[in-house]
Amino acid sequence: MGFTSAIEIEDTIVAIGSSTTPAARGAVRFSGADVMTITRQLGINPTSERSAHCVEGTINLGSPLGEIPVRALVWPTPGSYTGQPSLEIHTFGSMPILSAIVGRAIELGARAARPGEFTLRAFLAGRLDLTQAEAVLGVIEAEGRGSLDHALRQLAGNLSRPMEFMRSQLLDLLADVEAGLDFVDEDIQFISDDDLVARLDSIRSTLAMTREQLTQRTRDKSQWIIALRGLPNAGKSRLLNVLAGHEAAIVADQAGTTRDVVSVPMQWGDHNVMLVDTAGIETADGDSSLEQISHQAQLQADRAGREADIRLWCVDHASPGWEATCRAMHQLADEKRRPAIDLWVATKCDSLGDSPSDSTPSHPPAPDPWIRTSALTGAGIESLRQQITAAIESLDASEGVSVLGTAARCTGSLRAAETAIASAIDYVGGGDGHEYVSSELRLAASALGEVTGAVYTDDILDRVFSRFCIGK
Ligand SMILES: Nc1nc2c(ncn2[C@@H]2O[C@H](COP(=O)(O)OP(=O)(O)OP(=O)(O)O)[C@@H](O)[C@H]2O)c(=O)[nH]1
Ligand SMILES: [Mg+2]
Image (cartoon, rainbow, N blue to C red):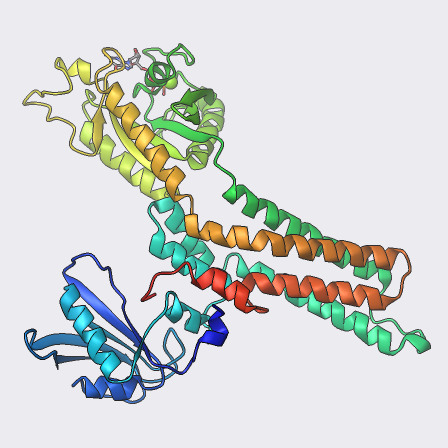
């Protein structure tokens, strides 16, 4: 089915916009020319014809549901998400009630929305470009912080802005080349061949880089990096050795033993992982002579933490300042927040004189989400392993599934644009007529336009929006 051809864009559409599983609140969404009329026919009285507002009211759904209290968010003008008068009715999250509202709206002339049709309208109204529409899908489907982060960045235009910029540069060059064609008999050039080649070359390499980044996102993640972080002497190195199954890192009583980052590649079930031991996090008052080394070690450790997919924050459970240290680690993790999973590991639980399953009154057990472990007795290590595996699997599953859709869709267009630019460069170099150059530049600009949807076809829209669910 062709989306644009099948669609009557002025139709007023309606759908349940909230989750279809039971929830406290639910929403029914409307968009289209007749929204204001239907709103009134439902018994809700908008208080403004000009600005977005919220009104309380009731809808009579007849027997057996009766009068239902609702809150209506009304966008009377094209200033809404979809670029059309829009309405959202918020009420109890009960399917019979929400479905009855949809049914009532259909009786009043609305039509049931197709999958992604609200977002499609936002796209057609110029509110979003295609990569952002896909990011909306990414946000809806995000399962982990990693995928949510990708989707939000894409929604913020991280991909489309540079694409649009490159496309507009290409169009400028195209204009120069074509203007030159009009004056070819007078031998007037609007841009020198050298300049043209240099600018095309720079666009081509930026495109290649973007494509490479996108491909990296689609590739199966080949290795998961797990970094151990914590204060000096927290027991990171010993824990790493236990997880690795051999003495990869030096363990000593002395705080500040680990300096260089120690990386241990290993197979973790079906996954390749790299365990990374780091220098303990120094507090500000580090002492003199070792300061330089220490500074380097801190920078390296910090980088390892930033690059990690999973971070194990280790705190010595037997240390006196345990609670304060936990708070400090949480704070650090927040500051360094990026798409990574943080696991909280209480170490040396054996030195409390008991097993991780019980506690002494003076030292309360580590609360959730702290995983209590002892590298000495092996207690809690299996549970840590399981949580790491679960983390890897959640990252694996959530690596931006839908935003990956953008990558898959766009790499072909990017490649086409690169090829066309390369041919244009060849034509300039070969002294061929600029007619050829101009036609290649046109091809390149249109391929880039497909990425953001500046140039779109039914087929592209189909591919993007059919992946949405109804109501979005
Ligand atoms: N009782 C007990 N001691 C441990 C455990 N884990 C580590 N230790 C001891 O704590 C001390 C520090 O351990 P490391 O693993 O070197 O600590 P680290 O966090 O790597 O320290 P730095 O490299 O200095 O940052 C050593 O004496 C270890 O033997 C444990 O589970 N139980
Ligand atoms: Mg160490």
